[in-house]
Amino acid sequence: MEKKYINRLFDKELEFYLKSVGAIQIVGPKWCGKSRTAKRHAKTIIDLMKKKDRDQYVMLAKTAPEVLLGVGEKPILIDEWQVISFIWNSVKEAIDESGEFGQYILTGSVTDNAASKSLAGEENERHTGTGRIIKRMMRTMSLFESGDGDGSVSISDLRKGVFKGSFSDKDIKDYAFYICRGGWPLAIGCERDVALQQARTFYDGLVSEDIFSLRDVPLRKDETRAKKILRSYARNVATEAPNELIKADLRENGDEIDKDAFSRYLLSLKRLYVIEELEAWNPNLRSKTAIRAKNTRHFVDPSIAAVALDITPESIFSDMKTFGFLFESLVVRDLRIYCDTLRANVYHYRDKKDREADAVLTFADGAWALVEAKLGDEEEIKKASQKLIELASDVNQAEHPKPAFLMIVTAGKVAYKDDNGVYVVPLCCLKP
Image 1 (cartoon, rainbow, N blue to C red):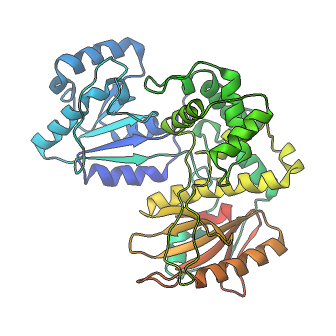
Image 2 (cartoon, helix red, strand yellow):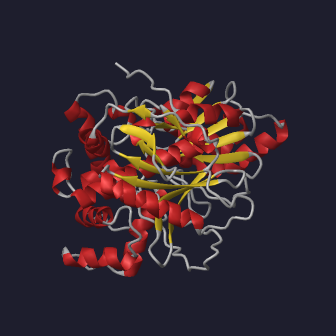
Image 3 (spheres, rainbow, N blue to C red):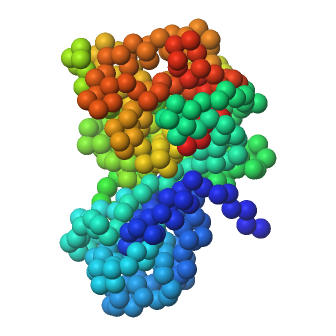
C-alpha cells in the first residue's frame, strides 16, 4: 500500500512557479520526494524511470521532440529528465512559442551538465533557460513537515519582531533520533528500526552505485574508498575543514588519494546533491576585520553523516562534540528549507578572530539575522547569546545596520527571549 502523502512546504513553491514561469526544474537528492510532489501538480506524466516506457520516450525525444512535449494536458512532468537532457532546447522553444506559464516540470537527482552526453547518448549546445525555466532545489523533510515539530515559532514573525514563548515536548534523545533517521519521506511514521534503515539504504546505494554513475565524472568503482571518503567528510561536518585535512584523515586510514581523484569524488557527491556546503557571508565590517571565505561542510541531510560514521541514536551520546556538529547540520538543513519558502538565503559567517555565526539568514529586502545552534547547555547558551550581540554590533550594513533578530536554536524544551533580546528556540518549535 502506498504511504499517505505528507504535505511539503515545496508544494506552495511549485504552485507559485507554475503560475509565473514556463517550466520549473526540480533538483535534489534521491528519495527526497521530488517525483511524488511533482506528480501531484502535473496533469500528464512522462516517467523515464520505467524501463518499459523509457525506450519509446527516448526515441520520440530524438525524432520528434515537439510530439513528446505535446503528448498531453499541461503541466507535463518529465521525471528523471536527464535521461533525455538534450531535449532542453526543445522545452525552451515550446515555451517561447506558446508564451504560457506552467507548461513543464522537470525532475532529476543528478546535476545535468550541458557539456556532457545524456544517458540516451545525445548531446547538443544548450541555450540558457533564463526567464523560461527556473531551477529550484527540493531537500529532505524538515521537522515541521514531518510532524515532529509544532511550528509554534515562525521565522517570518521573528523577522517582524513578533514572538510568543512556547514549549516543546521533545528532548535531546528525540533529536539524536532525528539526526540518525533524517528527513527521508519513506522514514516518516515508520517504526523505529524501519525508519533508521532508510538512511542506511540510501547510503548503501550511494557507495555501491550512484557515486560512480556519472558519465562525465569518471571514477574507478571502489566501494571501500567511497566509504572512507564519506566517513572522513562526515568527521568534518559543520566545519570549514580544507580538502587537505580530509585527505590527511584518509591517509591515516590507509588511503593515499591524489588531488584529482579526490576532487572528482567531491564533484560527484555535489552533482548527486549529497553534499551541500554552506557559503560564507561577506558583510561590511566597521572594524575592517578580515573574514574567512571558506564554505562550511554539510551533507544535504545529517543522517548521511550518521550512517557514514556508524552512529546510532544511542551511541551519539558517547561523543558530544560530534553530536553538536550533527545537530548544527540538522539546524542548517531545516533553516534552508524554511528560508526557501521565504525567498531568503542561508550563509555561514566566521572572521579571522574566530567570531562565528553558524547561520546567517538574509532576506530579499536586505534584512539579515544571525543564528547559533546549541544542544542546550545553559552556560553555552549564555555565551552564545553574548557572542551574537558582539558580532551583530560589528556589522555595518548600509540599509539594515541592525539584524532583524538574533536566535539560538537548541535541543531544549522552552522558547524564550533572554535578557540580551536574543531568542532561544527549540528546533522543533520552528517553522517558516
